[in-house]
Amino acid sequence: MKAARIHAFGGPEVLMYEDVPDPAPGPGQVVIKTYAIGVNPYEAYQRGGNYGPMEFPKVLGADASGEISALGEGVTRFSVGDRVYTVGSLSGAYAELILADAATQVYPLPPNILAAKGAALNVPYGTSYYGLFLRAQARPGETVLVHGASGGVGIAAVQWALSRGLTVIGTAGTPEGVTLVEEQGAHLVLNHKEDGYLDRVTEFTGGSGVNIVLEMLANVNLGKDLKVLSKRGRVVVIGSRGPVEIDPRDTMGRDASILGMSLSNASPEEVKAIHAAIYAGLQNDTLRPIIGSEIPLSEAARAHREIMESSAYGKIILVP
Ligand code: NAP
Image 1 (cartoon, rainbow, N blue to C red):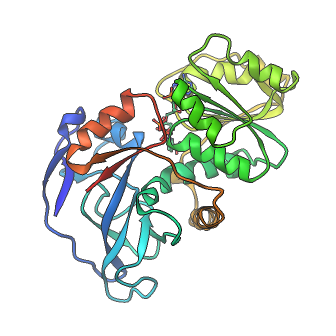
Image 2: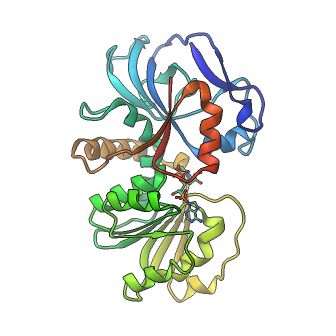
Image 3: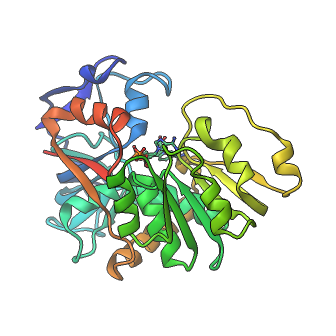
């Protein structure tokens, strides 16, 4: 089979499209023939060496959709041909075939969902669910600012929040991104590249501020987020690419909280709950993954350039 692997840390050019032996399933494992593979910023950080040592060569990637092509001994939960998506894997997702643990890394794809969209589920919808409902404990009737709503995690966050009766303010950095977030049904959409855009948040909330901020770029925004929070407001730091200075006094008068998070901290029970909620949301059409661009797996390096450098518009997926 073909896979995109790295043999050393480095820039996007270290992603090599090459022949790799087909995986064979051991007990409790399955092989999945991929339809589409989700590209996440995390994989670009990993490729650059930001997350510490790894064994080379390494196939990156956690999110894919596909169909079961082989079953290991004892696997009864799936049959060959079942449409599924992955939540991590044993062998890496940037590949034509993926080896995965059947009990923990594979979830069924509802029949109404196009195959490609299954690659946009795990990290985007899992992260936004974990941030919004498990870290911020969002409640119906609250207002959330999705700061960076045009990308994979942001679009998912907007859809989750609307499905639970929150008022949603989203931001994007381009007119196309603004339109995309508006199309999801957000109540107010702002361009985070315009001067003074956060004044509109204060105006929109009648001066009381938002209950929750889901922050995709905390190194740029955390200080400003604290100023648009309501009393007992919570900022969830989902993404950050460096240090930032804040005024701690902005948290004091508000009893505000800054909550860090990593999806990898979700417990097995939380992961199960997240994917049960994803299945239900896909079935009832409140969750609608948006694929912004499809790139051949052989051009994984281009996908890594785009995820880090271009303006976001839903998910980037790789197609084998
Ligand atoms: P993505 O698809 O590349 O989207 C990035 C988002 O950030 C876009 O909406 C982008 O908007 C926005 N953005 C850019 N500049 C901004 C600014 N100055 N202010 C506010 N937003 C800005 O990435 P993603 O997959 O959604 O992930 C978002 C972040 O979360 C990444 O840093 C990722 O590493 C992190 N993440 C963390 C976890 C975790 O467990 N903590 C899990 C998944 C992802 P425009 O491009 O329209 O400007």
